[in-house]
Length: 140
Image 1 (cartoon, rainbow, N blue to C red):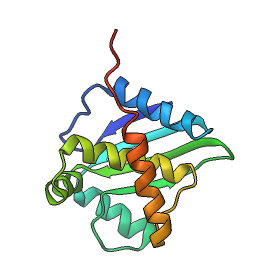
Image 2: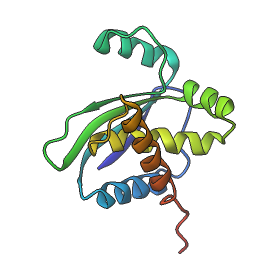
Image 3: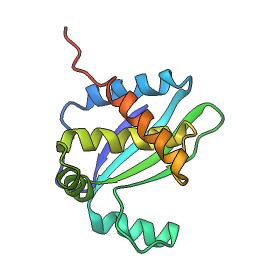
């Protein structure tokens, strides 16, 4: 089950659409959907987590805590809406596209993709692009 939680003045439009898309991404990677919690927050909130749990004193757009067991994906994904907005501006993309990229990035980490080396980062970007194309408005 995918859930969305808010620690900032932001509400995800059409949670069901995002949840369905993320479920499809998980299935496309031959994984099983467990409990995945998205927590939308601001820079200060995420900086505190970064300092307290990762000993990093930097701003970031996403921090994911992976509690997966085998192919069952579980975890908490914290996303700074402040960073997403700024990155969208810096990368000259829409806020919505940058948000989708960051959201799927967390799930891809749970699927086993890394982004520490140049080669790993290149594969992660390719997977992000591939999975973003899976997002579409379903017609009734």
